[in-house]
Image (tube, rainbow, N blue to C red; front, side, top):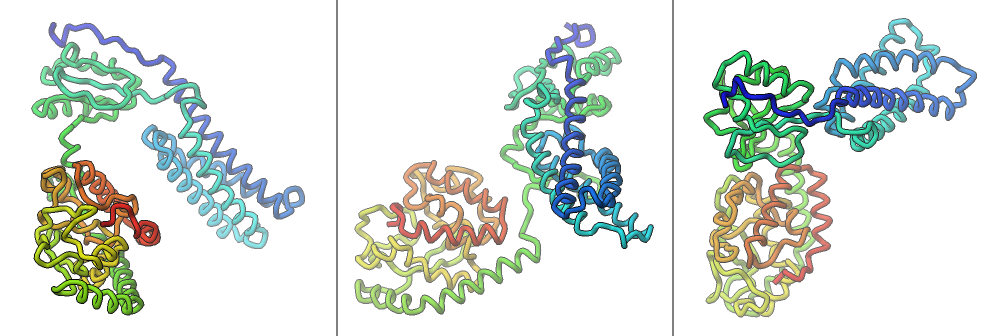
Amino acid sequence: MSPSRGKKPARTWRPSASSLRVRLILGMLTVDTGCIIVSYMAAAGLRGVFANDTAWIVILAMVIPIFVITTLNNDSYAATNLRDPFRSVARGLQAYALAISAVIFIAFCLKASDTFPRLVVATSSAFAIASLALGRFLFVRHMPALIGGNPFSIVLLYDSGQPIPRGEFSVVIAADSYFDPDHHDPVMYDRLAQSLSGADRVIVACSPERRLAWAQALKGANIQSEIFMPELNVLAPLGISAHGDTPTVIIANGPLVLFDRFVKRSFDVILASCALVTLMPIWILIALSVKIDSPGPIFFSQIRIGRSNQMFRLMKFRSMRVDLSDGAGARSTSRNDDRITRVGKFIRSTSIDELPQLLNVLKGDMSIVGPRPHALGSRAADKLFWEVDQRYWHRHAAKPGLTGLAQIRGYRGATLYEDDLRNRLQADLEYLEHWSIWRDIKIILLTFRVLLHRNAF
């Protein structure tokens, strides 16, 4: 059947989508204005001016219309912002901040500062910010139940043989039977427009060679249009940029911004220096014990993979016999490993053997918190780590750490199975994506809880 002469695909989404959208906007507007009104009334009551001073009512009467106009202008009620609770909250708070700023500016220009109820406005604003954030979050989170259904329609168009994206769709259409983007026919474009009428988004699953044709066909459809690209799951782009007039895909962010790097490095140097001074008696005691227990050097050094996939030499207290040491790290340490000395068993079970890495931190090879560095020959289920998961190299975008998110989650010890590595890798990538100095502090505090761990051997 020719795409130009085929029948229209059956439309299965509810005809009440437009009424649901009206309910959504009116409901959100009611929540917004209600939160602001209640906040001002509560603040006036707390200040004891609810009935004997009308200045706060005048302020409220000015804030409400300015707020409504601002929300309409900053797309607070747009579908893209009402599908995400956090984006919805951000838009609402932005609108209120602009509204109250405009009212204060008007009061200043009219020289009404003598009668301006500063404390009432400040208290009201604090209440309004809290109530707006909570009200918008809960409304968007429970929107289908509150308005009687999902007002957003998502259409999937797919070519035969193409993988279908996961997720819920209002309508799924086999495009081959009705539309051919390579066939520039007004009838076909009209049928496409009618099929997408009332939808909020359309997602196309097609072969790579057909993507340009579909993009051209949908650019004039007046609907948010997207093309499914499963290879992005591997590429994992972070955004879109451009070099000159040519668009590029951002696949890595690079280092932290200068201020964040300064904060993290300062934190590392201060903490490592204090720890070295405080723990010096333990250092001396462990050094003597290692030397007396078995012949060989006090420290053990091993090549590890560090930031930017550059290799460095990691320091530890020696815990194994010199003649049985594994410099490449191909053999994972087992619970009753015959290579471990008597002192080595103790310092490994208490993680004391890791203390010399404070020197690596001061040198700049490591950080206090970050993905743990691995030896070159480390294996999981007899496979090198990077053979188990190609994302392994992504974890080296930051300095390796003495401790990390994987460690406080209990992912340590021998990697006997591939999932032993994947669990650690997932935690490391999560750490890189959501870094903050506060999270570093939290990880350090939680590390004390897992210093004595069943997998520490």
